[in-house]
Image (cartoon, rainbow, N blue to C red; front, side, top):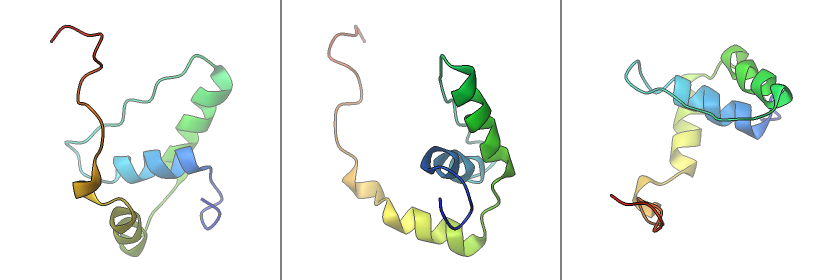
Length: 74
């Protein structure tokens, strides 16, 4: 975030936005302030090195938790 002058949320959204045309972030918010912050992610430009660094920091094999909330019928 600091390197790009953005919040951690903006960095995360920018990373998702740059994963491919078939990947779409769906952030939710109830506050205009947060919506404005989410839209700020569109201005964050990540280099190939940035994308690799962020991807390496989030190991795919370490996903934890249930796929569905126990209260939902599925």
